[in-house]
Image (cartoon, rainbow, N blue to C red; front, side, top):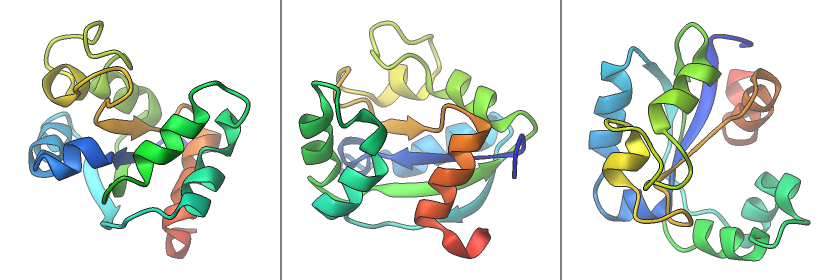
Length: 137
């Protein structure tokens, strides 16, 4: 998986606002191929485990609460250099700082309600993909 696949999650704000199709279309236009997707409503335990790396950060509780507030859509996408390409496609965490044409510039509400999660390294992409799609391992 290293180098060619990454995990992204359409977060509850964008999913609930009916933006999932537009986000997927934008990512496909940027050359990504959708390999796996599912809609689910994360439990508090699942969100805490997934975002465990941020447990000591001041926004952790708010992040867990947000990610359990409604359905989300984790996806595995494929493209050469997938992690870096996805980070570029989604834009800066704060939509006010995101480049034009990026997912967050187009669909995020705020820094906290930023529409989408993306893996930050090949190693984390593999770990995160297994979290939601163990059948791909």
